[in-house]
Image (tube, rainbow, N blue to C red; front, side, top):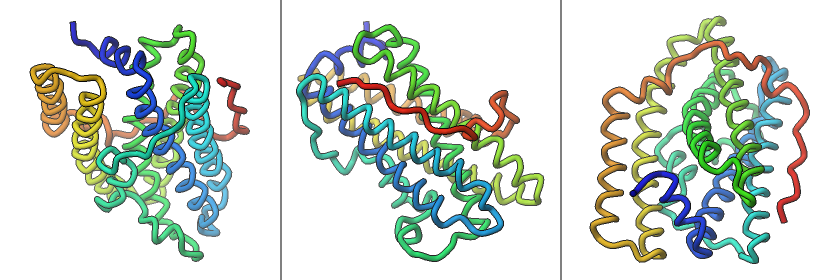
Length: 262
């Protein structure tokens, strides 16, 4: 039976597919760490209270990248170059979602609208990350190699999502509500398109590595297109709603040290 668990188990059991999976994940997390570090350094003076939380967000992402690389090292594997068509963060940036990297490399302070854009983009992408890690935690929390990593990263992604909700609601109360909703909607529709394209690309690469039959590859592609159709129709709404989270000040503490996986 083809299921999310059996599919990931197949990827996990093969060294080459596992190497590609961890390389893609580590690259994306490291990129997110750099972006957050730059945003924290460029926070406008009137929003300096956010800087420690943005720094914590970036430190968490860096930690996740180290965890995925440590999982590779534990199996005696080296990272591989990430195929451009699987680079989720770069494809989002090219689509104009979030803050452009050229802007982040410039040494001039961001504006409050820039911070709102960053938070709205993060709210959408952290929704995806939280859901994906929740799925992995559901199936692999007790796995001898992946279990601790999955549980730690999943908790962090939930904290990131809670932080985005809380801060966006604060900005909404300060008069940015309409901009936030417009930005969230634009980011959500762009993200679900990029997620579809990246999912198809990843499955194509995995299929070649694992020797999937044409019917199996076609079935998986059809499933990805079905998810995209649902998200275009109604699923996008879960990415644009804002509710006060149970976890308040989720990024207010220090960054936990990554455990040793190697």
